[in-house]
Image (cartoon, rainbow, N blue to C red; front, top):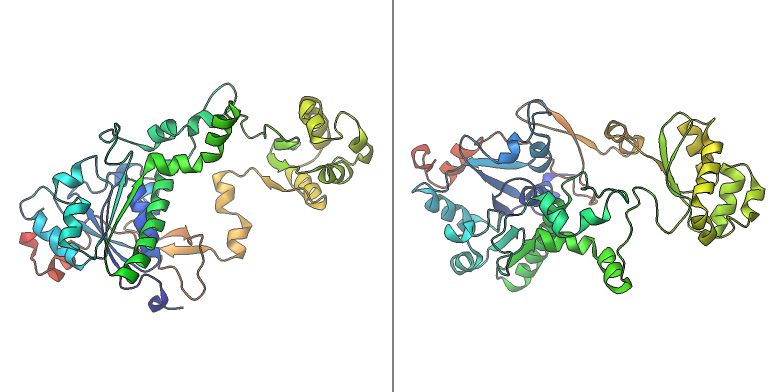
Amino acid sequence: MTAASRPLDGITVVALEHAIAAPFASRQLADLGARVIKIERPQAGDFARGYDDTVHGQSSFFVWANRGKESLALDTKAPGAPDVLRRLLARADVFIQNLAPGAARRMGLDHETLLAEFPRLIVCDISGYGDDGPYRDKKAYDLLIQAAAGLISLTGTPEAPARTGISIADIAAGMYAYSGILSALIQRSRTGAGLRVEVTMLEALTEWTAYALNFAHYGGTPPARNGVAHPAIAPYGQYLAGDGKPVIFGLQNDREWRSFCAEVLLDPALADDERYATNVQRVRNREALDARIAQCFAPLSREEVLARLDRGGIANSALNTMHEVWDHPQFAARGRWREVATPGGPIQALLPPATLSGAAAAMGAVPALGQHTAAILAELGLGDGESAG
């Protein structure tokens, strides 16, 4: 497989981006072969560079969301910046931005202005709430959108709601921006005209919570918070093996219940106990059933419990830590890890989840701040003294 086989070879993306949502979207494009020129503030850069220093002295967020890009250090408020931006956009296929509300318009980078000047350009705007409506000027961060979209109200235990442990609102918005840009490229290939892709974090994450939204609106009561337990199926959730390590498993029907009793609990007669004979009864008697399962698992290691579950055809997984996920045998067996260069030294990164036959992901290097400034300015016919920053 060669670089020439990548779907987005020849596509140039200019990204005025920071944090997670837009960088995550443009990284997907870079993995598919697009040239992504990331515009960063001189000296400081994308503020995600400073979130932590855990990866060879670099931010775990930044190295994840920014591989395969070129970094152009540019002070967008400097007098020469508009000329640099226009020269870049004249050569670009896609412009993506997730600046603060109203910032792109103040810079003359709103979609109406850009599409009038560059009619084949695809303009992707990512924001918290959109450019109209009563919340248009409201700042939005991942945690705030998790709250606004109701996700926090669904997550956690009956006693305490909880945020999701990853930047899921940013990721949702980034993925819709990515797929929207791909759709726009297809549309442009048919019409020859550029178009706008607008994505809001609120709408992206609310789409992902739509099942719960329907459940609450039409059913009158929102889904209960149950930690890792299932509110309507038993047994289904987290259980401890005798070595204290958690496992997750769940049953889908009464046939699986019989197999569970015979192969996992080693008590086939329990399948006919009227307290547990149907799922409805098992849910009603969940506490007693969980106690019976705990008694069975007490002398077993996690691996022994998982082996019994596999033997019985019961869907299951270890509840892995991040270290265990890193060492997951499935990734190794499928050859999913690749080495990626960074300014701090090489790191390992997983291939993108969508594998295209005959098209290897680019998996390019993570750039140092301003690493490509001189080369890009020279390409535009400008010298270092005209860098506007």
